[in-house]
Image 1: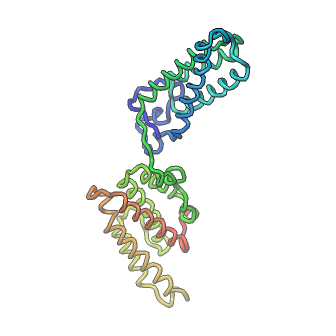
Image 2: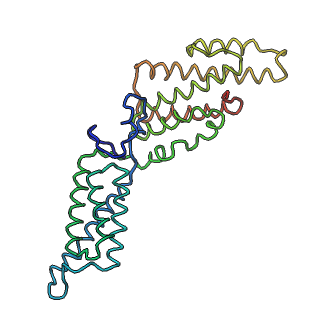
Length: 294
């Protein structure tokens, strides 16, 4: 994960949050996902590129440092520079990118690209890459939590099939958990529940427009208690389902939602994980009988 330290940006293709800095964006939306091993590989490759010149300098009688590099070396260097180019574009490393592009063009256009040229070019690319890495802040995700960031909708498919508009908050809840933003994770989990509460209200013909959770739950409970034989053969089943759902929603409201929404409490790893999993299981249960209105 990488984020810019400052807001200065001279990119040819600016990140999406630069186009409209006033719009609402997610934490994940301003992050770039990278594999640290890839950057390490670039550093190793740049060191290898310089190795032939050191060997030539140490054995001047047998080799000439100003002779053109072998074709197979040229192809390997070109491929490596192209990989560096791709990562520099993704990470907005504009200074390194400009140098890498010039090296690539020179390799393609000039046959007499020497070992000395390779030594100088690889050294300059390495220095620029180091400088731009130093100007960034890197965040590492614990191995046990990587799946929440890379596959944020994993295990939520049942919920998403019945309540498709939960997709945004599901992804945000998962990514916030991975990034240790635990209170934000709970906040998004409560937004997911709100979609479930709306579906439950529609199921029992209770209006949810401009109403708070307490009033919605109370109105649903009245409808559920009023169910009887005249409401169909499965009225007892409907009554039990509605009663259990309302009890769960009251629990969510009193235990977590009110605290998360009204700046009364913060949440840690353990509590947010319990809430996250509880919300997923409960929404899956609602999905066995309810679905979101299209």
